[in-house]
Image (cartoon, rainbow, N blue to C red):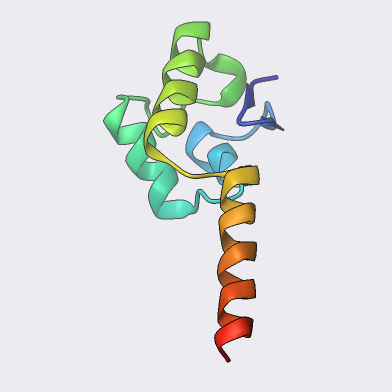
Length: 85
């Protein structure tokens, strides 16, 4: 099972669908990541090589704000908006 950004991706799903399990990556973002890294749409998570998983992990770390960081930023934005009414 591939673990990316602290999330275990389901093995039986296609890669671009499994990436959606990561908070902050939606359908469009998942497709962009796969196209940028030349990962076929039909490729399943269990068929990804270690190199491909590492490339996905690096891409998300460098260019995407996901999981804990995104939740923290959203929480702070909500608090700020409540304070300013």
